Amino acid sequence: DKGLEKSKENFFGKLSRALVGKTTVDEEVLDELEEILISSDVGVGTTVKIIRRIEERVARDKYATTDELDRILREEVAALLQENKSIDITDSFETEHLPKPYVIMVVGVNGVGKTTTIGKLAHQFQQRGRKVVLGAADTFRAAAVDQLKMWGQRVNVPVIDHGMNTDPSAVAYDALKKGVEIGADVIIIDTAGRLHTKVNLMNELGKIKRVMQKVLPDAPHEVLLVLDGSTGQNAVIQAREFTKATEVTALAITKLDGTAKGGVVVGISDEFQIPVKYIGVGEKMDDLQVFDRMEFVDSLFK
Ligand code: GDP
Image 1: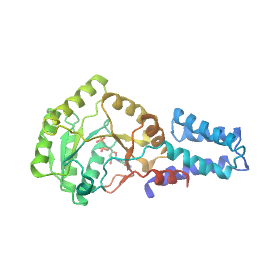
Image 2: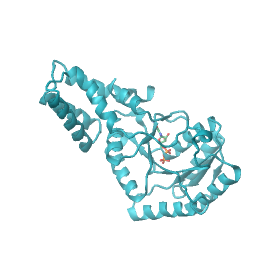
Image 3: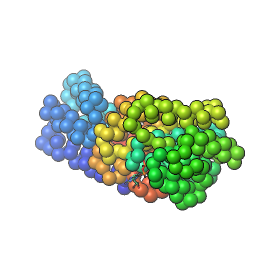
Image 4: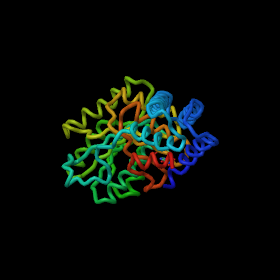
């Protein structure tokens, strides 16, 4: 996987260097491991949890070789990643009895790759024969509406917009109306990710939700939080703010192509108990992958 190459080399490189000349998992090895996990941005809480679990296993089995450490570590990391159970681009609407249209509200701060992720999602749904409508409800940032419209043109998907500085909930309302009218499978609503105060964010997202529910009472079916994986602990802070402001049901973590900090995925998934559904591994249309837990762990430890 080209996208995750960099995280892989780094984690694996560090781990094997730490284990040179070692045969058993002792205090020193565990200290090294702790440092590696923290420097890979797994986060202190999750790192401590992993180390404690390994200590327990080493104590219980009396003796663990460093050869086994790789396998044990993979198992522990995989166990911390939430399983992705909700709909993804590869699901079939006909056989899964999914609500139709399926409404995805996308949240996240500016610059994390929100618009790009929406464009990529629209493209991939479209490629699989799904009818998609986009709603440009990020009406606060100068370029956001135009950027989404550009993506809409590029991937040939209609974009509902009212221009800048308009009421985002009115855009969302119209996008849902349009989606119902044309029999869309998926409606993706972009939102403004202004974090200046938690109360504002909560009010804004709450209002968009309430207005959407006038069209479809069970919308949104998914609230997708987009985080920039290369920002490490900043992504964790954003996850904390957004999960307090609204009920986030899935995560998309972007920019994992250019970072050695893929560990942040493990920490966030563990701390917030929210599944990572997509990962962004580049700027192009096809650079969005459905998150696969075991594949991801493999990419870190191979
Ligand atoms: P927004 O402000 O959150 O809507 O962010 P944008 O979608 O405009 O993205 C900000 C920048 O990040 C753009 O230059 C994107 O091309 C870039 N970007 C988005 N996702 C990825 C990714 O997965 N990998 C890389 N390398 N760049 C990305």
